[in-house]
Image 1 (spheres, helix red, strand yellow):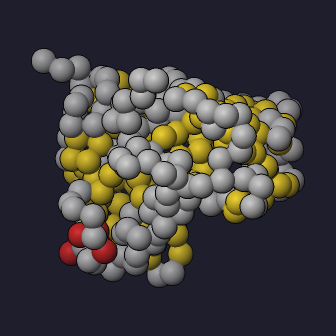
Image 2 (cartoon, helix red, strand yellow; image 1 turned 180 degrees about the horizontal axis):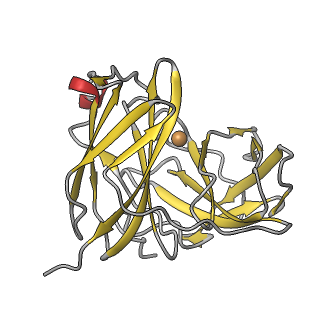
Length: 248
Ligand SMILES: [Cu+2]
């Protein structure tokens, strides 16, 4: 079977390359955290029980409402049966998308994949407008400045974290100094993003609270970036709307 381009847009399918994301239920209750359980089935239809860790975890679960609010990056635990479980709470009603990012075990090549499913939180909801493009974001007193152009085919993005005008010492979190998720506005395609540098390089503290990522943006358009970083012992998420111009 031909494999989906791992560098291309991911997270647009619940099933790809013989693997399927199977939630126990797609209903979530706003305001009430409860266990979200799911499995990933393989080509034989059975739950996958072997994974290759990516950034210290076998599976990363990203949940966001379809209007790109309410972002969460979670790490479910896996039972021996292959069933994954994580407490999940959503603040408000709406349709959410849950992305599972993982790599099945036993593959010679690094081939992370992302499958996704919609989750329904019943009730009235008011869609939030997409924030305007910006090169700075503030979260709990931390200012994150984005430099670098978002370009179709190859983007190098650097984030500098500061507090009260001074660079912040970032702390390692899941084997890196920052984790970036990029979603395309319109269809929430999940982009493959990785820290710049050879494996292991990222374990050295970055100078001046700076972290750089390589993000191949597949098409012109708007993207929403979610940068998880750890400072002062807390993981926070800085969010940006960016625009990739049409290629000339
Ligand atoms: Cu993760």
